[in-house]
Each structure stands twice: as structure tokens, then as C-alpha cells.
Figure 1 (cartoon, rainbow, N blue to C red):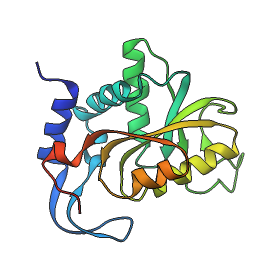
Figure 2: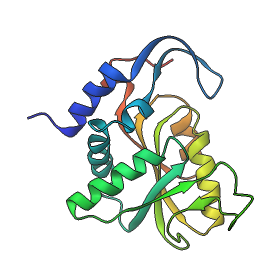
Figure 3: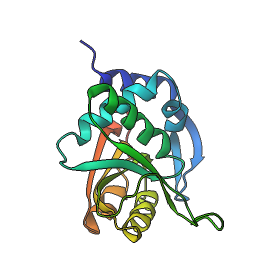
Figure 4: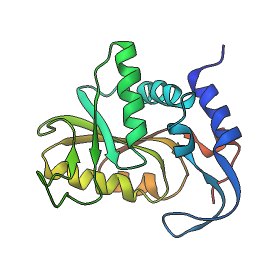
Length: 184
């Protein structure tokens, strides 16, 4: 029987890995690019992402919400929220803006009140860990308790070490070896 994870790996390999010369957000050069936004917003892949990520975080107690820095985290958090409901599990989602709004309530973290609540920062793929770390900083300002960072695809780059170095658990669902790729 093919699992949701196996199906997601096949979709990523066939539709979200691009070969060529790319510059990553970090400024680093790469010979391939994993474009998970192409799939995280796709009707076939989004439910699989939700299922795989729910499996990844299932053993972390007391988590009430998932989310991260907009834009990469948004569809991941939504997929977890929707697939959670399908399983009878309750996870709200939240969005962390890159900067606080300069109008309205001036919020940087949108969604439910997270003060004193256990949350997981999610991301589609991470190279340096910069986006999850930026999200963590904003979440701590509103009093959330960040218990982990969970990433769909780990690029085997500095992200894991940087996040763990500042005291957060780092988990990922799919590694480069699963996609037949070597670290760059």
C-alpha cells in the first residue's frame, strides 16, 4: 500500500524539483530548486502534505496551532488544519507577517490568540532557518510557547543546526535522500 508520504515524495520528484542554475533566498547557488509552493497550493498535494505533517507532529502534546512566516508556511499550516479536522484533531493555524502592519491593530501574528499556547512553526522547505527563526521571534513577542519547527522538505543545510542551536526541536518529513538528491 502506498502511503501519503510515498505519494507526496513522488509528486515532489516529478513536479517540484527543477534542475539548472538557481540562487536560493540565502544567496547560495544551487543546481536544483525544490519549489514546494507549486505543490503546497495544488489540490492533489495539499491533503498529502497535511497528512504527512500531522504524522510528523502527532507525538507533541498540547499543541493548539501551527503556522509560520508568510508565504511558505501558510499553505502548510492550512493543510495541517484541514487534515486535522478530517482526523478529529484540532489545530488552528496562524500567519506571521514579515513586518507588523502599520494600520489596523498593527499585528504581526494573525489568527487566534496564542498567548500561553503551545505552537509549532511550520515551513515548506528551509535552507538557513531564517524564516522559522523570524517567526519564532514574533511568536515569542505575543507570548506563544514555540515547541518545535516542522519542515516538509529538509535541504540538509544549516537550518537544522541553527534552529537546534537556539533551543528548538527541528523535525522534517522528507529529506533530500528521499528525493534522490545530494546536498549542495
